[in-house]
Image (cartoon, rainbow, N blue to C red):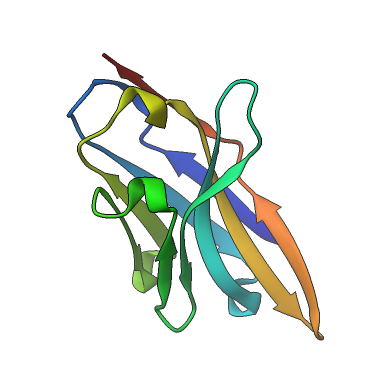
Length: 119
């Protein structure tokens, strides 16, 4: 089992910045990758950014150059630095941990944190 606790959401004006944090606990050794997803009202949940155990990252095209995912292994925490925020970035942001154990993959989710960008 993996537990995820997010923090750092809030209200910001367009062009501003926020940093989201996701603290993980539990069976850390089984985590293959961690990432951030978001879901806006009336839309499907989508991948924002992801970082693997080996440090490889990938981003949604809509956030490339503006968002950066990073991790602090000592704190078991993943961060999402969001710069130059736009109103279309408004959504609930969810932390995700992808676990691989005995060849099987499973996903764990945080409770979500609201990000609202005003124009």
